[in-house]
Figure 1: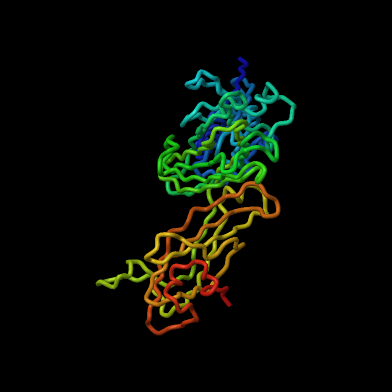
Figure 2: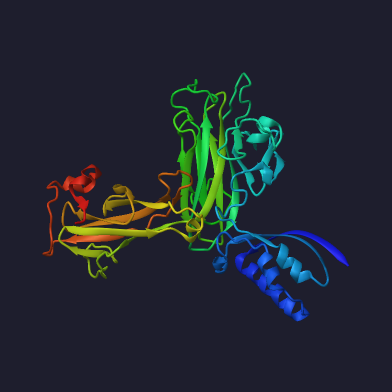
Length: 439
């Protein structure tokens, strides 16, 4: 009996390894031989490396199998194709209509065309959401010019965009996708968006002060509530004639087995021609950044006023060293030119606002921090950006490290020259006076 099977199975990587093991055991049980030539011809593609089977990421096993009862295992192994999401944990990350679309109807009765694997969530207004290719060319495989980085893109188009008497009505809308994650692991999302106030002409008649917010968000809990306080957002209000395609990136640490990625456009002003376009998204495990070789923390007793777990320094000088790493997901992108670019912030114990201490620092490094005044506690935090400065493309943020508290004590020890004024404690513009590179 001959059978024909086409299937797409969505399995975690550990589950996929179980499938392969089951097939091999089935072969042995049934006495089905799998020759060396069949092994060599089996089409297993795993760009991210099958060594990552221990990680609970999503993979897709596509099979097109023609077999009879005597060569089931042989044909399954011969024709199976592993497709791992080497560039993103997202499905249809680039919002391509070629990967399928579906239609929904909003409260005004208009039809919205949403890319597969994404979900529409209205916030206010009734904008038109549609594949840019379908909007411009009338079909997914149209050949006309569209505003996109690669292939198709996705358009957020204001209601009555050029129709009097009130063209380009305000709106706020998002699409989202929920992604399987590992609790406690940090993830990073990168994407590109462009907005047009007053249409795509440059220059145009967009009134001064008008803007369209382009946003990418991550909800670490996996909920589908774009207005929730827990959602971490990256936002840009830059117009198209200032930044044609702006890269938005955000990172967060998963607090459940699911995280939610939002792509959102908020157009708060009524003006003709208002619309935005999104394209080329990616979600990966985030890079890391950490401080190293800091003094040991102390267990505070009594009423010293020093926070428990603070690191104690004798004198007013401390070397701040840092390092970090690319994540396995980024390393699996087959691009060797990713670098880590670091940013360090600090604040005084009595101040809530963080100030920049180090920015745009490529690679591991060290600075000497000179405290402006003794018997004071400062907090420090660090994060990294994985980027390809010479090549562009996606950029992946790490999350901020947990703040490190350092107390500079009057106990005798090394010292340096610092500003005399106590006001220096609260003036980040004076940081160049009390930090320098390590020798």
